[in-house]
Length: 441
Image (cartoon, rainbow, N blue to C red; front, side, top):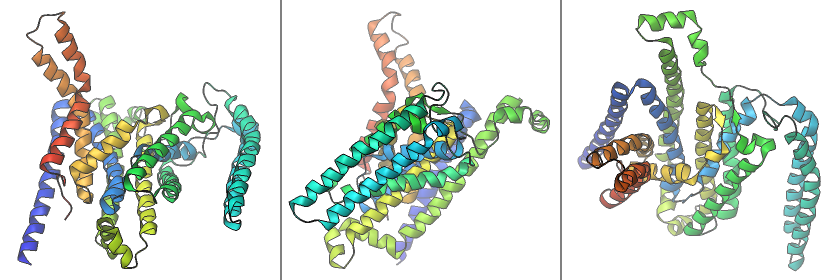
């Protein structure tokens, strides 16, 4: 017993020390590079930590290898557009009703195909289901295409989409979680029966399909033309700069109003994100240490034994996959709220799948605190490695003659330091600490 207590105490001390080191890095950045930069890193680090927690639920709790993280982040990012942006009334008048009918018809076709599949037997079942889907597809497109054309023709330079509901943007965060959870349910129902390597391939493809839809369906989110001006839950900097009381307080601290306004806005964002992250950590820790959490880890470690004990493995996998997608979608909505714009072209697997996996592996899969630490630390390195690489290449090439082909090549190569560093970190961690900085107990 005393040995377990000592081990637990050492684990808590290690956790506290590593988080103190992370806080010191943020403070050092504020003192040397400016508080705007430090708070910007902190805010995206908090959001990245939420993403890492979602992936950690799927992999660390249940051993599900999801390589389509980018798609669920994008689904969450769609929510602020649908909830917070004002509706484009002209677009609704031009094709909103037809679009609604088309979507309802599509759902009805899928439901009819499911009923046909369930009620018929033998070869006729497949043929009849395929017939319903093919006929339904053409009928759906007959409704859908004219509606899309009418909507996208309404002021395409500034609108060309239906817009949203004009509600407070914070409401979009749980909606983003619901959208991503819904997409995760569809993926899980079709792909969770596959072996782990096939599951990875399936989720990778489905994630790319989601991103492709968001890039091409202008009526939904303007596609690659982007949605800008998404409302925010904190004041705008220009409003603070025009507030006499705020300007007076900034002057009393010896800070110019512009700098003070940008720093204050980022502090407010950091407070909101920290509350969400800490609430998630509290909930996930309680879940992980509950009978449900022990059951999930038992299924992860030995599915056959868990199934022999009467556990419904497929159902539990579905449950944890959907919950993990919901957390990822929540982070996607938070990120779009921080950015103030929806840019589907920015959703790349490198940034929103590979990097999130590095966070989980570096922090320690199966450990919520480890995933949180990995999210913040890897994001800090992702931002700082590029200027460090430029400075390093400048030092290395300082003695070379101007115009040297080698010097030009080395300086140009500094842009790749991010990818090189992330790869090196992953290799070093897997070699010397394969369970991460904060291993699972």
